[in-house]
Image (cartoon, rainbow, N blue to C red; front, side):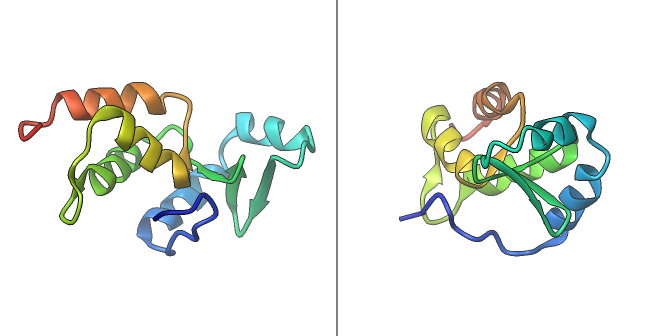
Length: 108
């Protein structure tokens, strides 16, 4: 079972997220609200416990691929994949991107 507070291993992907997070004005505005739902740690922005991924299609596609093409689970449908991705990540178009990724999967 995967828990909401699961620690994501630091990878090249996380390093790219760190670099992109420093560029986002939208993220900084959200953090200024001081609502205890958003924070910044090690140059990674968390919103409601999930890593916020700034607009970067290459990173989004890598996250989607890693969470869809799972050897031990198989190809997940849209709803289950969305739930799995949202455990650790969040971006504004996440729902539409998951839907498109699953619809374009030849195995599904």
